[in-house]
Length: 482
Image 1 (cartoon, helix red, strand yellow):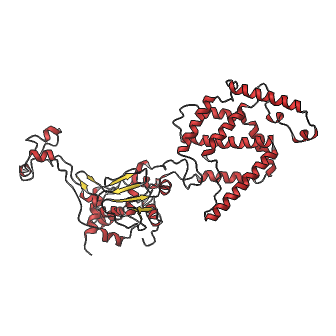
Image 2 (cartoon, rainbow, N blue to C red; image 1 turned 60 degrees about the horizontal axis):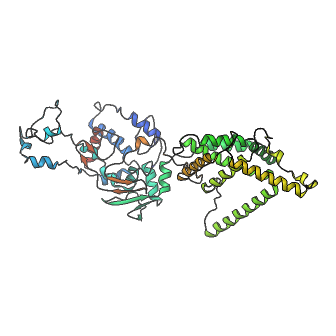
Image 3 (cartoon, rainbow, N blue to C red; image 1 turned 90 degrees about the vertical axis):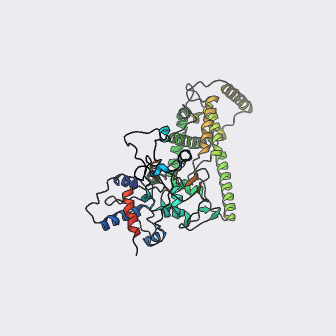
């Protein structure tokens, strides 16, 4: 335990239940329900086996010597005191019968009015017994790293310890870097939101990154000119199909978007942005080159400013959500300006070429007439309802804007170490439990340590996957005097 080894941390041959949300740990918890009988072992072997099982879960990253100093044989417990019952009885019924109260019929189910009647007897007869042995590892719940894990701000106790050591946790407003700090009742601890989102969010898909890497390696075999020409041709030909994709995205309930629909929306915005860039280059190559040069100059200026401030330059590889609305509006205008099904489907045929414009110069009257006709047709087309299946009406455009606004609430940001848009990690719901001695506010990633855990009738507030018999043997192991 000196170096906190993780050798066979989630072993399947000799399973050990750990304080983590790992899927193998969930499998070991299911297997842990069938613990072999201990009747054939000696009492020392039973205590050793129970201690090894319990310590594998409760603070396995803590040294045994340190835990032995924390262990206390004094167990905190409370008894439910009903003020109504105490007002009706003076306590003499506790000594009725043979001195331990009257025994009620276990086969009969008593209602609440019968319990408070004169013949109800002891108020503790029909109560559940208090599992005192479930509080064996209660002193460990005061540790800061264990409390961070119990508040569901980390996916494991080791990760919670890492957050504390790296300075991502504050106690009562002050940074605390000691994971063994013992909390007092009323202490407030808070974890950095980015760390919590990373710990509780789904990880990035490394397999998909491998597929992208393989695709980029395959693309290196082709020349850049061939790739650019193929991309332009494909974008120009897929413009009507992209309009159909837009109609599919706004079909259905806009207020409820699944993860797949959000991903399709981001992909559509990126494809629309690329398509418009290719169309602009085909219409006016000189203007496109000038705009690209200006954008590159602005990026260099921003990089110099960031270097002057001492920050690292991280060029985003995605389109910010602030530009999505303008991109969609421009894309809709471009779709509406497409030729209809009866006209020439290739947009390149209607675009002037550079060699033709240089060799033959049309008259100014012809240009004026053509511009007037184009403006009149565009105005008429905007005022009329869409005629083809690839057109988008104003109502559909409003629904598309609703989609973009909904996406801004949980945006896509590839610079984050976790998967965006954020969603909970897998198998998290099976470990979702917050003990009663913690008051957690998930909105600000903070929690209050209300009091020390106690044992109640029928409940021990220390979460544990083991039953009372295992914890009783572990408690007896640590009771011995050295």
